[in-house]
Length: 317
Image 1 (cartoon, rainbow, N blue to C red):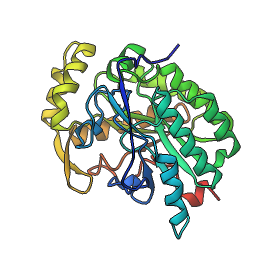
Image 2 (image 1 turned 180 degrees about the horizontal axis):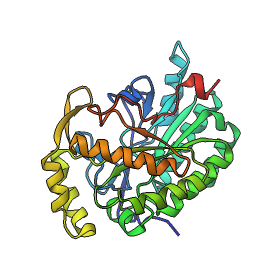
Image 3 (image 1 turned 60 degrees about the vertical axis):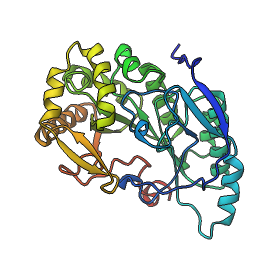
């Protein structure tokens, strides 16, 4: 139960030529080394911003960097200073339901943990048992964020086609927190009138809290112009009508992200401000602390969403 159907995904192997560890333009990742295991992602989330990248291989295709472990080992050996932390994966999910992806991810994570390098990841996939055994050896070096916005499987399936069902994501949280891994829930993106209702959020917060998680990151849906024609039709199938959502977006603003090189359409400032405060109050009733992503809400907060975990001095002392 919870397995994805990825039989139609075309998987190819490719040698990575550029360096493995890269810098990110996201403020939340500015001081963290990042690594992508693949180009493209089998989860096929309809809202995924990486679909707009020039390196995106196209829908239904995943390119696996087969030489990643060897190249990373050489790269680490040449560095003069220790790498403080590595984040998986800015443009894809490292726990895609593909054996080739999971094998490479395991090798790379094993290499990092053996060298004492802290790692962090965000996933909407199932975490196999072998990874849990690996994390159990050095849980203090691992930070996890589990992406989830609803407990409704039909909604999750519509917008995150090949990601695992919500129950499996809650199970991820339970297993990780039981091991002592620092774990957060990431509710991103919340869709107005669909996944941000009091009833939906209250149920989700209860499940997250029962799983042992203490804090959540929340962020509302934003759109790139290139993706609006893809996202809204899918949401219409789920919601019946997107007129109210379209109206909200039309009253929103274009905000710079990634050092002003890319604009995103965000919901009106006041709508987000009021919504986040309401969400915060609902979460606190379940004993959860809420973080807002300042990268995508710079008109509201400068807070960081801790996507790569707390600073090393607080998590890894």
